[in-house]
Image (tube, rainbow, N blue to C red; front, side, top):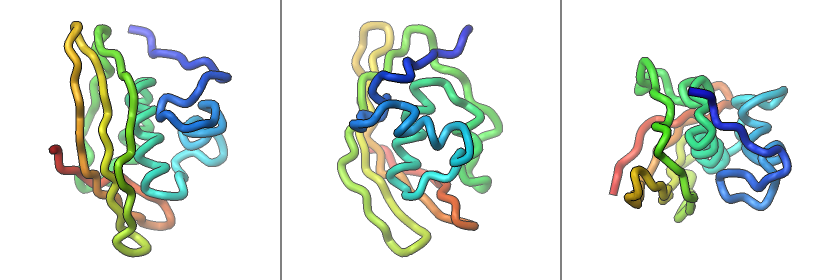
Length: 134
């Protein structure tokens, strides 16, 4: 199955006001790759990576202590519909949480993923640690 592509001039999948290359794309590739400056920016870039099947990015930004060995690409009938960030909060300089809702549709059925994700910063780089589903 071919990876989904994204029009460089289109809005970013994360719902931000900038185009994909100016928003999450800069964290996915290029000189700023893997260097999202905040936990929220990392969470948004990970959502965009899920939408675009950027599995190596997802694995690289997942903390080694909780990272799965592999990830599967999106099923062909899955469509991501949008992201809403409810709350982003720093616990201290190296720990943060981001509460979000991601909506999708698969096989004609709507799905809603509501998670409070935990992030940790090590060596000046943010990682997704884990999350609690609501």
